Image (tube, rainbow, N blue to C red; front, top):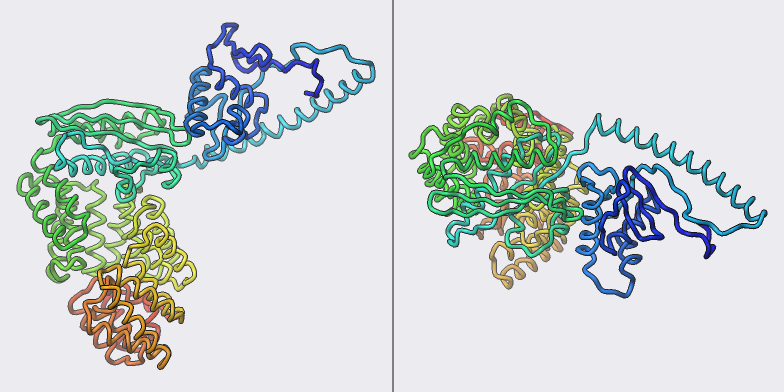
Length: 635
C-alpha cells in the first residue's frame, strides 16, 4: 500500500474467511463472525503481514499502545485464544496462526485473493508507476511464494524424517484431601503419572523427571515462566482428593507458549484401581497431542490393573522417605518397602525401590556396602522376575552388577534394557553414564547420556553437579567447571557441588580458588563460619609456605581431624588420592587394595580418576584394575 489517503486497506480472503479491515469485520462463508475489537485488530495486524513473524512486543505496542499498562502476557494470550476460536484453528495443527515459542506469531493462511476495496483516480504517470509497482510486487510475491513453498516442503520432509520431540512437565498434583498427611499420596500420584506418560511414545514425547517437577510445588510462578525454565511445550497440572476408598482426580493440559487450556478431565476410581486411573489420564493426553501408541503400550493402558491399596500406600510412603536421602529417611524407606512386600509379595515396584535404597545405603551411612549390596541384588532380581517390563528394576540391577559384582557386560545389558523400556527415565541415563560408561572410559557416550539426564531433569542439583564430574573423568576441565557453575547458579547452597569444584580447582593448579570453595562447602555442610574461616587462613598459609605440597599436606592433616564435608577426602580411596599427590605411591596402593576388600562404591572410578595417573604404570595398580575388570586407560 502507498501512503495515499484515498487508498483503502485491502480485503484479505483465506480459506472460507474474508477479513475486511475497512469494515472492521470478519466473515465466514458470508456470515459475520463475532470477534471482539482487540482480537480483531490483532488478526488484521497479523493477516496484513502473511508469513512474517510479528513479535509479542509489537502486538502489544500496536494494539494496546506504549503508554497503556496491561498484563501483557494475559492480554495477548487471551486475544490469540479468541482469534483461534473464531477461526476454529487448532493450536496443535494450525491452519492460520502459527506460534513461534517465546517470540510471537506468524499468519500462515493460504490466500484465495487479495484486492483493494476502492482506489482514487490516478494520473497516467501515476497509473504507469502503479502498474510497474504492481508488476514488481507480483514478481516478488511469486518468487517469495515459491521460496516459501520450497521451504515448507523441506521442513515437511525433515519433520517426517525426524519429527520434533515434544516436552511435557507434570506439575505436582495438589492434595485436596484436607489432610496434610496425605501429601505423600499426591506426590506419589504425580511421580507415577510421570512414569506412565514417559512410556507412551518416548521418541515423540519427553517427560520431565520428578525431581525437577517437584521444585515447583506450591510455587507462585506462572505457566510461561515454568515452561521456559524447564524448556517444555506442555504442562499438566491437577489435584487429587481421597474420600474413603475413592480417589478423585482433576487434570488439565496447558500449551505453554500461550497458556491455552487444551484439555481438562475429571476421573475417579477406587484405591485398588489407581493404576487404571493413571492409565486413563495418560491415554487421554496421548490422544490430545496426537501420539502414536504401539500395540504393547495400548495393551498396557487398556489393561485392568489392580493393586492392593495398603501395599500401594506403603510403597508411596517409602518413596517419599527415600527422597530425603538421609540416614533416617533411608531407614524408614527400607521399613516401608518391606511392609509393602509383606502385604503383597507379588507387587514388583517395591522390590525395585528396595534395591535402589539398599544400593545407596552405604552413602547415607545406614550399612556398609558388603551388607547392603547382596540385599539390593536379591531385591532387584525379584523385581525383574515379577515384572520384566519394569524399567526401574533393570536399572537397579545394573547398579548392583557394576558396583558390587563388577560384572560389566551384565551391567551394560541391564542399563540398556532399562533405558529401552523407559527412555524418559532420567535416573537410568544418569546411572548408565556414571556407573558404566565413564568407568569403561567411554567418555563421549557417557557425556551424551548425562546430557539426556540433564534434559529430562534440568532442576536436579545432583544431576547437574554430576554432569561436571563426567567431564572431569574425561579430563575436559573447562567444560566440567562450566557445569559446576551452572549448578551453582541454580543451587548455591548445594555443598557437594562446592566440594567438587574445590577438587577441580586443585587439579587445575588454582589452589586459591580450591581453598575458597572448600571453605564454602564446609560452611554449607554445617561447620561454624568462624571455624571454617580460621581453617581457610591455615590453608592459605600452608600453600604460601609449601606450594602444592603444602596444600595437600594440610588437606591430609585437616581430614584426619574433622568429620569432613560431603565427598571430602575421607574414604580409603579418597585418602589414596592425597597420598598419590604427595608422591607416596606405596601408601596409596595399600589404601586402594583395602578399598577393594570392602567394595566401596567409588571403586568403579579407579580407571578414570585423574589423580591416579602416576599409579597407572605400577604393577599393583594394574592388578587392581584387572581384578575390577576395568580398562587401563593410560594417557
